[in-house]
Length: 288
Image 1 (cartoon, rainbow, N blue to C red):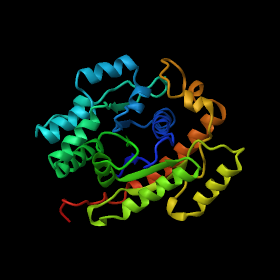
Image 2 (image 1 turned 45 degrees about the vertical axis):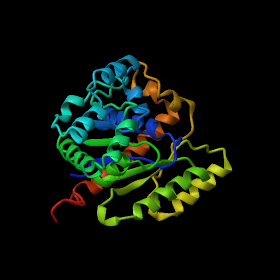
Image 3 (image 1 turned 180 degrees about the horizontal axis):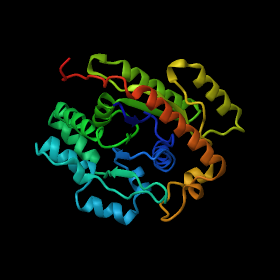
Image 4 (image 1 turned 90 degrees about the horizontal axis):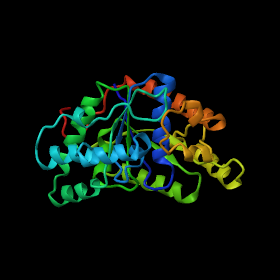
């Protein structure tokens, strides 16, 4: 079944990691899904949202992050088990106890340099393909938090994941990021690419005529497959990024914020269910 989703926009500052957090916690709390979050951003933003800072530092010190898994697999040719790098019991939401995390570390940037220097692109992509192939059989949904830009690692996720999901702010610069991404996707189609699951308008100000106009323009472009609900720009959604143990879902996502997040997550589940049973996409290097 198709269930791996790379979340990315070539433009930063669109609320990508906060969206991944909200989707994961809502999928767990309201849809009873076992969710794996793979943090592929060297800033480790979503990792620090799901795990206390001291806990994340301990994981990084003990070499149990995505970077360490990829270094062992790609650069050393070892065969580590991905399960040794998965953290359970993450999230500060009491009802969201079925989220799992493969955390990140700033060393991810150095790893990518080594991959490029040693021309290990094909081994990296094979490692990503194998990892996603294995986690598909264990988790209900896999969300991959990709960094902005188009690094060699992000390209591997995008070419091996089943879907890509693109958050965007309703402004000109963020829309340019979507266009850059669209042009990149059109390059080398024979190499395979994730299917567009949709665009989520994020950090929306309903009182801004400019935001309303940009949202309308985005929804007019059918290829965007925009989600019906736009996530509002609210302080409480920004505060959700701070790890505060022992709070309920409704305390973390109250009122309008919670309703919007649940609406987007409901639509995400519906889209995944519609697409899930289609054949898994074959990619370059696989038998046809």
